[in-house]
Image (tube, rainbow, N blue to C red; front, side, top):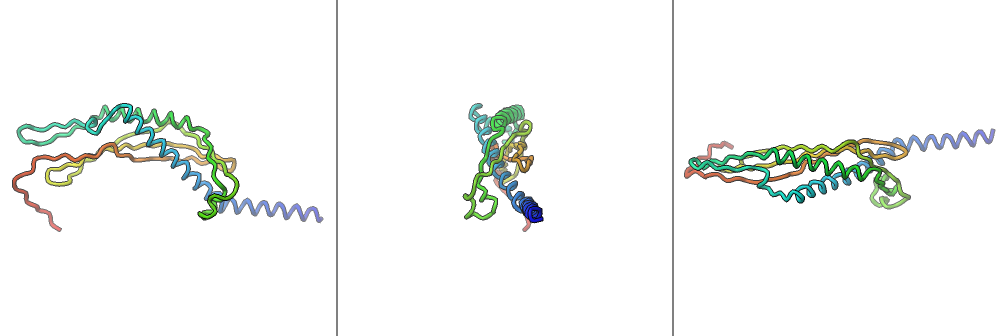
Length: 203
């Protein structure tokens, strides 16, 4: 009976510990692991974009065609969609290759990180998480034209980058989607300012 009682206490203690771990520690562990993974992938996204732009020797003016009407001095802008689509494809390929290279990358975090208390963040043994990529990265773009003054147009182009990875540990596995919006260009075009300008806006 004594042995059974000891076994029951041990089993009850393990069960209670498992419940507490799943309720309090595990959600924090997943959240911290997700943050580590997101930071890592965000760096890979930035490196991929920088490498492609540098390798292609591109500048802001390469992404659009600007023409001016000789009679009216009106400015016409045409986005070089073929170039931007090509850049999106190159970045997608570069990032996908980088993500494949980080498959099974090991991240070691002190157990104290999961306490949520900064003073304990460097304490305890290491908690290991592995990162694996899921599929290829996706890259698309969007453009925006906005009036910013008298005959002034602000032209912006953004890259929308998406990637998916898994964070894996013997106790859990979670797939996360990471997306970033990066500005490709941001420039202002000046047109001819009329001799008389009447502000008809009403506050």
